[in-house]
Image (cartoon, rainbow, N blue to C red; front, side, top):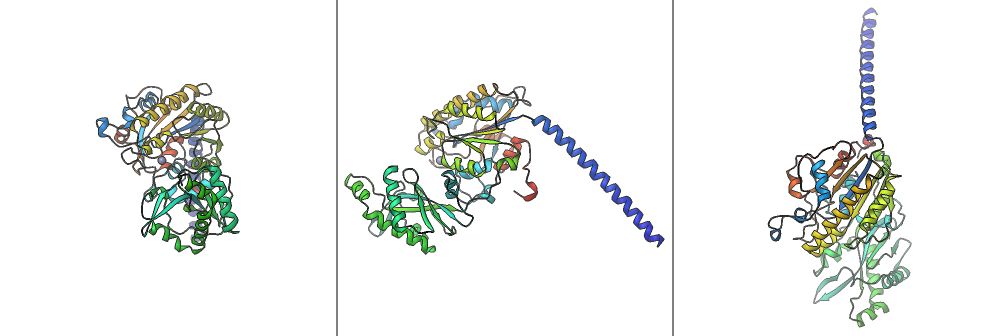
Length: 452
Ligand SMILES: [Zn+2]
């Protein structure tokens, strides 16, 4: 009896000590959090993304990259006073798209969360999906026979007009649509097919990757889903006979003679940005995919007049709206598409111009204007993915980034040109977008306990 009591006493002592230790730990953590909170209190955050700015070294630039030769005192300032590093924004196995990269840069691991571009574009158009629904991006395309080969002649049906496309899509819906299958018309050749309670399991191929190729393998891949294949075949029959296509052919234009569903998925489960990071955020972009991501993560999406997604975009307008947004929000993301577009065009001259414009009219202008509303701000400048001019498409290689903190970075540390080489020489590497964001925000996601 006595012995048992003794054991009990020592157990109690041990428990008390443990509890004491826990309490100290907890209060230390609270103090730490308080200190961090006071440092971060009122901090404004800006993420400035030059889409596809990064590149490879080029012979025609004497072994330099476009970022290296572009005139970028804004980004150089951020890198010289703050920090520069690199980041693997594209997880292995995923395609190097802006949707994947920016989902990561917003702190959502794409390897766990990304389900396809279809549902992101659907969100941007306000299409509501139930958990069992699948959204496909659906192009109007031009297919042609060459002997026995079936060729993808154009992924855009000759950049068909929105007016013509809408009429074609409406006809398809009327004669081939079911309570499960419906196409939501978008702009030009870009539409969304919703398959209610459908399947998203099959392999599909982006039509722009099939240009000029014999596509039987890709067309036959739809055989996996007979219900979908049947819908496609019916649509082809309707398109073939449609007066709009007859007229286009007689005018020497490419007919929109097929639909091409791809990039499908169910709506990704993304917790609201504010709930995840404790910050109220806003996003500015001319691109639907970024708008879709903003809607899915409950960022305030701000439409800026004159934002075109190209070189002629309203750069200053984006910054003006961002500054305004920061009065009500903690964080703003500005996405500029132009460097990516001109990289796809393969124009080195325009790429350098696009980077110059991004630096002068977005980064430098932002630095000028932000001090009007606060002296406590942190800026992350980066690209989502590289779009090397030599390949005219996206690359999965790591991207350069730089961060400037107006409170911590009070003097110039060194002279750095913001470019790939300086970034790759840095010891600060992040193996994912969420890691970079977490470092930038100086905090961990609030939902660490329920994973991701
Ligand atoms: Zn691109």
